[in-house]
Length: 302
Image 1 (cartoon, rainbow, N blue to C red):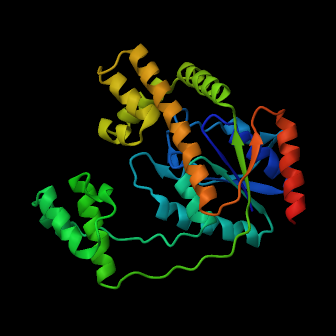
Image 2: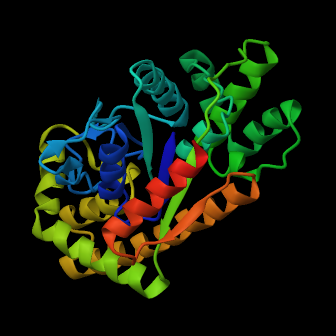
Image 3: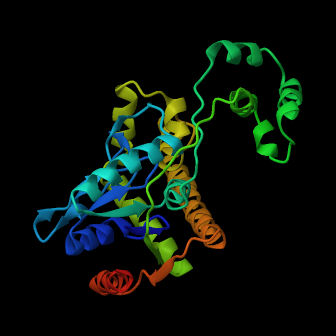
């Protein structure tokens, strides 16, 4: 497998499509928001990037859910391995592409992601307690090293739900196919990265990103759900509710995306520390030179 990762606005999709086209592969998206139908401009689904030399490169895990449906790393991992198995059975090279670090790492390092079903009855019992009482319950199951579990009642209740599920011995050990992945990282110098992000934001607004958010609201997605998706949709929601002016929305969103890109790179560096080998390529190189570099690296590993 080939994995192409990097910060937002790095041109990963077009690169992955060209590499897949050249090597007889198909693209598998690793983006936590591109799974949703109707969230196209805001999530950067550049469908035209999948057209290479007049041919459509097949892609997977894009537009598989309606906006508002739940999706998480466990669901992604399950969906990925399903697609991966089908591609390998057809002799097709999977090209994993995206910027959601946890999704990518869950596959590359084959995390045993526990799936804990929701217990509505137990949740109602726990919801009647305050945060201090919830923390005390959680402390019976584990040492409280991870303080993020008690940042809110919602997080604490979920942490208790998981701890009690494990306590009952209901966890199943999962098995995954062995994967050898050539991991390619695309990165730009800071100033170039910032310029690309700002220009892409302007382009998306010109393409109708505000209208896309309005359409989602008309389709029944509420403002709380929009804000949950973060970044573009959070700021678009606040603009459409009159909380922010257009200029405030643009400025705040632009800064938020810059911070997000920085966090992405921090996560990928953490992956390297955890043993994931990443071959970094300068995003400013000519496009086809990047494609050729990846091809050469892939040939050297096969």
